Length: 49
Image 1 (cartoon, rainbow, N blue to C red):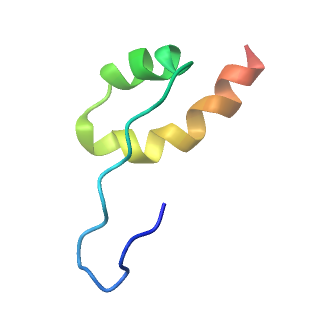
Image 2 (cartoon, one colour; image 1 turned 180 degrees about the horizontal axis):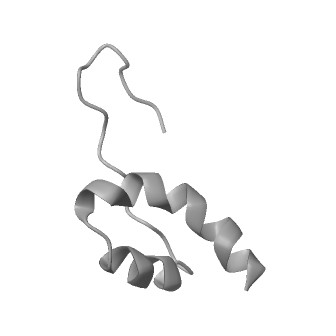
């Protein structure tokens, strides 16, 4: 994902693709502000189960 680092606001999180239904369900329980920090943490957690 490319974006201009000179802008004060970061770009919105891109939409999740196919095969991410479980992540979408988990994110539905979190506030919108927490989506971006949580997404990188979810795949390793799901791999442990």
